[in-house]
Image (tube, rainbow, N blue to C red; front, side, top):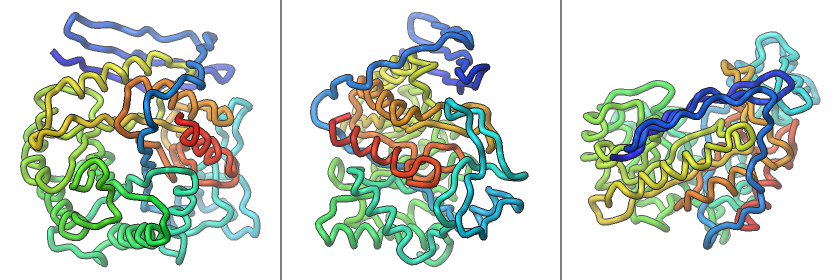
Length: 387
């Protein structure tokens, strides 16, 4: 019987340590419960110098297409001085990098870029591609959702236009000899969409980009699509989507509980664990190793390929001002290095970096005011050294 998991977020406790909520693991032999740690129990993460196993695997950063000037202002609130010559930090953090306090009423962010840019501005998306490539990232897993119509076009939605601009930017840097490719991260998690919507979007995507050289073909001759939030959909929906789209794409799920009944409809798993905490929850490494083992033990795909395991890695996490309570401090790159080292024990086929530019949840590495180039330099160093 395959192992099943339930993960819960960690919460910030007194003195800046994190308290773990219960994490349960259901296995063939019974139930193993991991009880909460006390707030005063500081847990050491595994040494960040753990040796990488074999050659370094590709690293794709989740890349979001929702950044317009109006979106920045919506998140910063009307009291933030968005027209200032030098944009101030919108919040104050405690000495651990957590305990965020907003400096402006209505603000939900802890950081800002040097100026509020839109991804529609000339050169912005291309600049992101060049910065990411210079940091040794393999590419972006671009987060996209269409309008659900099979007949939609590039100009139908702002996301479609920005996806097209990203593809164009990848073509440009590739023509200069810079290696950088794309996966698709299909945005179907925060709000579930209908089966017909998913199928319409996938028909548009495969018609438009199914053979586009901007998309990675190193492991499959089909573009890779990570179905974000696949775990929220029933086996019936999984079956319908799988039967329709898997001949055209490599369909990877976002599953925290892996079972053979669901594995039949997916080519692998890329669990999006943005708040994994190597300090307060060192058990997370063995949990992910068991999840990866379950994925690999669930048989082969219809085309004969092995199931794919994409391990998560994050520079830190802070959603204290945007509807959450959890925080994982960055510790000057130590969190990123520890997650690379610990999750490398799962022997991933690839990595999903969370994220390039998800600023509201505090997982971004895109250089901004608070951390500057620090997180990107830590990422480059980890990739260059083989994690």
